[in-house]
View (cartoon, helix red, strand yellow):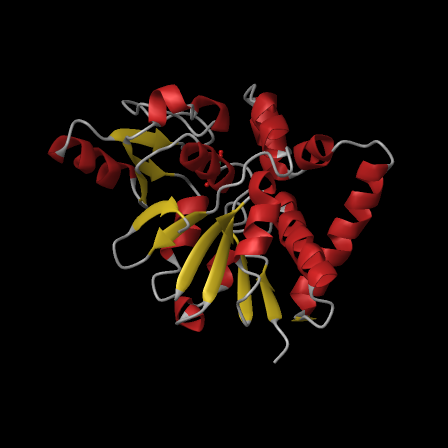
Amino acid sequence: MHPHINVHLLASRVAPKSFAGRTVVVIDVLRATTTIAAAVAAGVEEVIPCGEVEEARSWKQRDPRVLLGGERGGLPIEGFDLGNSPLEYTPERLAGRRLVFTTTNGTQAMLRCRQAGRVLLGAFVNLEALVQAVAGDPTIELLCAGRLGAISREDSLLAGAIVDRFQLRSPSTTISDEAALARDAWQAVSTRVKNGVSLAKTLRDGAAGRNLAAIGLDRDIYAAAQIDAVRVVPELDVARWWIRPMR
Ligand code: MLT
């Protein structure tokens, strides 16, 4: 059987039961999945995604050793140890630690995957490692977090880049119309990148990128645009509800 890829450009539109038993890749380029990839590359013990700020705080009340990370409105949350900048997630701060993490869109997309068989996290920074990780799966669901209920440019582009690389390896792969749209958009951007327009500039032009630039976080956009900067694939274990490096 030929592999098949579905792309879901907006997580909030997807019924969680449609993922039952399937392989899902959650995508939130700016910045949740980029930051978690950085945390995993930095040697975090595990990341526990949670939907609400108060839920994260209650983890810390139970165990003061956990680190709290994430954002609301792009900004660090009061009393948290870390914001949502991938650059903060260094081995010095993260190695061997447990991180409880909550963001506006990315962790919400993860919560939609409770019924999935396998959940991996994708970003431009781990594109190749991710494509290799899903190479044997018959059906792959690429779930774009989007932003505040709207499709986001950078998540759609990464989904397209995954489809593009996957089809280069396995030309017989079949894809949904949303996957074809995302791939066509990525191919247009990729041509511009080859002609010298940086990927970071394209990411900055989307709504999430403009928001980050407005709050002085251009450097995070640049960090998120570093294709294949890390070799890790974070995996969300839905039974234990933690993220660790894929085994
Ligand atoms: C999110 O999950 O909503 C994002 O990562 C937002 C952000 O980084 O500002």
